[in-house]
Image (cartoon, rainbow, N blue to C red; front, side, top):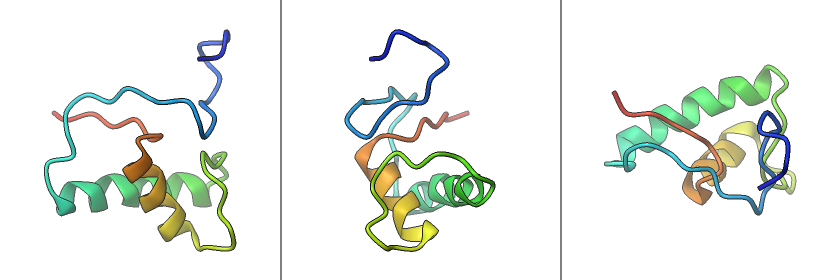
Length: 71
């Protein structure tokens, strides 16, 4: 991890998340929030390779680069 705790992780840095992605609906819910973050200007954790925000968000969630919390 980088020395700055407030810095966003890069594509190769893992982000620990609390709780497993239990099912496909949970993946969609987390990815939906990530799409909104990307559309509001958040830095991407993966290379978009020409894909739309939705595809990038799902890829980020599946790669484990997006933190999420289960309540």
